[in-house]
Structure formats: C-alpha cells, structure tokens
Length: 422
Image (cartoon, rainbow, N blue to C red; front, side, top):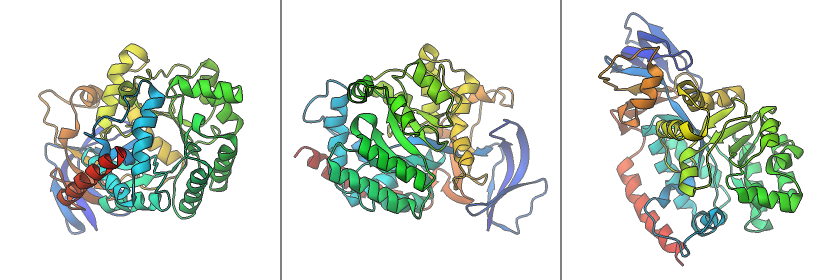
C-alpha cells in the first residue's frame, strides 16, 4: 500500500529544486516515490493534504549513543571530573557498567522516538554495556524497528574492562554481523590494545565492514598513543588499514596534525563531527582544514535533533572552521551519501519529512539554505515517513505508545541513577 501526499511542495534534497505536485509514496525497504499532476487515491492507504507544507527527504544521524538516553537530569557523579578522562571514568564508564537489558531496550526506544519526532529515520549508533553485552545489539535493533527507525549499529569493543569483556564485544559483533548490516565498533585508541585491534580488523575484513571509532576527541588519546605505540592515532589506525574502508567512521578528529589530516584526506573513510558534545566536554573545536569533504554530522548522544546539530556546527564554526551555508547543509546531508555509497539499506527515497513551515518571507531554491539555518527547526516537523510507513502523524508517534514508554523509562532512569551511586 502507499501514502498519497496531496498538493505538496517537494524540495529535492540534492538540488534544492522546488516542485508543486502530488506524491505517491510506496511502502517497503526499497519503495519509490512517484510524482503525479493528477490525484489518484485508489492505491493509497492514507492521504495527507500537504497544501502550504514542504516535503523533503528525512534526516539521518551520523553518530549517536542511544545508551546515554537515561542520563538526562541525573545527579552529579561520585567525584567531580577534572578532565576529559575523568568525565569518561566517573560518568559514562560508570553509567554503561550499570545498564541491564531492560535499560538498553528503553534507552533505544526513547532515542528512536526522539529521532523520529525530530525528522530522522536512520541512525548510526555506537553502543556500550560491558556487563550486558550479549544480545545488546539485537535489543537495540528490535526497539528501533518497533518505532520505525532504520539503523547501522555497532558494539563499542574496548580493553578498559578487561580481556574477557573485550572478547564478549568481539563475539557479539561477530554474531550480529552474520545476520545484520552493521559496523565494528571500537571505543578509542587509548582503550584498545594491539591484540584487540587486530581481532577487530579481522572482523571488519571478514564482513567487509568498517570501523566506527572515537579519534583524538581529547589530546589524551594522542598522548597515550605516542607514549605506548610511538605514533599518532591516525598513523596507528592507518597501519592497521582501518581508514582504507569507505565504511569506516572516525568520530571527532579534533587533536590531529597535518600529517594525520593528509592521511584521512587521501583515504575513503568518513569523519563524524559532533560540535555540541565537544563544547560540553570542553575538549576543543572541530576544524575541517586539510580534510576531504567526507564529513557528516552526529549528535554523540547529546540529543537526537540533527537540525540542531547542523546549526550548532555552523555557528560555532564561524570562529573555528571554514564553514558556510552550503558546507553546513552538505555535512548535514552527507550521511545519506555515506549510506548510499556503502550500499546500506533503510534510507531510500521513500523516507520523507513534512514541514509545516509558514515563513514570513519567501522561500525558494535560491534562499533555502538561509531558511535551513535560520528558520526551519524540529518544531516545524508535522509528519515523518520511514520506508513508506507513516511513523509520525501530526507530531504524534504512530507505531508505539509513547506515554507508556516514557513512564517506564523514568522508572528505569531512577534505578540506573541509584545503581551508579552504589
């Protein structure tokens, strides 16, 4: 069955060309969209009148941490962190150790709901739960799919909790990738020894996948690499041929030198920029100088609003990066290019957002980018279609009971917070 969008103003996400038309949206993972001047409702399961509204491709998150969803509003850690390493140790590495299967499920559910309502129908996620490793990726996948969100998942393999847990991370990755599209996740160079790194690369090659890893988010990562391996982080990853995969995602890349930038530029890998997280952790500012155009935006688990991430990157970048209107939009949309280039499914043309954006000024192809940065927000998203299925209608989730999920997630959040204080 299909959805008919009547009287729509369609914005081509690649060319920004505007077209007034009726759109027939096919359901299914490989569903198409068809433009019609005449209205034919015979094959439509549902009809939405889009008069005065704009329809364009839905969004996607280039780097997320669904496991952090229950952290919002939690109390201070046992020790006040004095640097980035201590932020990890006393906040995130404490939280991820306390996660159980139910917490993982509801973290994924509330993240998927938030993504959908903010216009994203595809999420690239990076998960960690050292004492609840097995089946964790399957739990997240089922939760995302229940809401209607497509995904590209990985487990954050790390030696920081010992060899046994690192081995579990490798095993769950192996098992998951046998039946699902996904990536091989690593935390960061400073928590992954050569033996584990070698095994992760073997999995990457076995499944023709890529590595999803945090890179030089803080200078500590470089210091550790130089002291331990006598080389910089990107040099180490390059020696393992990690950056030679177009599926590899290097997250952050703040504290890298010119040689490292050159290595990344000449490789097919991608960089995920996460401006707000960098600001929150006070680790530095992203600079694209010397890199290729393979840069996409993520949220790093701060929230699920890609429009917000794009605006933050643009405004902060005025003082630290070479970024203009077009560059900001291209990085916002580059995640689709990453997905398409690597033949991942779930981000086809039948993934759409409907924007109820009643601008006080004219909006057209020539000034759309100005509206993108200074006008359009998640508040204007009225409906979201994922793989041809209406998952948000009039700003309400259609696939799950959001109220019941939030009720349970609040209970689990208190359980998590109390556990973190033990």
